[in-house]
Image (cartoon, rainbow, N blue to C red; front, side, top):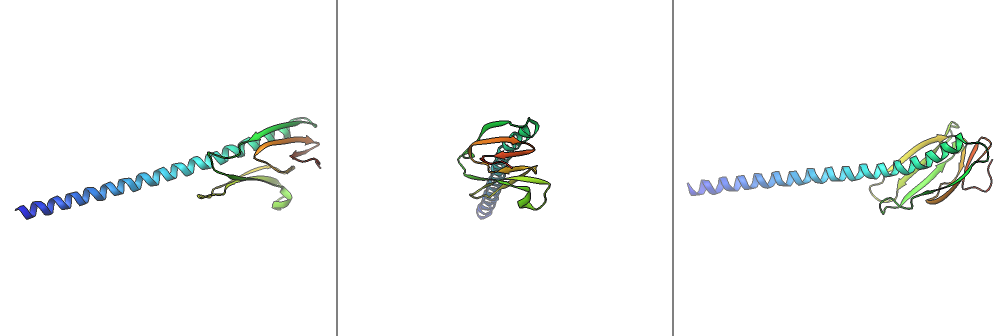
Length: 143
């Protein structure tokens, strides 16, 4: 009888340990997914700021200029910010703002903007202006 009680106790303790390990694995996976979702939301937020500035310039009158700032890092993570001109994409219909993290997990967010946008987007201060139907970012010359 004593041997049976010992075996049953060992089985119960083993099952409880397995359940505990599974619980921590599930918790870890959920935390990682939440962290990745928040990181993606930060990329979207930066993209939305740039997109909003471009849309504001599109609606403004010719000669509109404005300085705006984009964060230099996202919660301590370095990121890359690129404005891809419509002619570089080959569609001719729209340009793109592409934002991506350098480090793992590598995430990328792409936002379509109007086609007549050119220049570069910088982390930190940016200068936007409207000349005719063109929006120029951080450029001395504007088409």
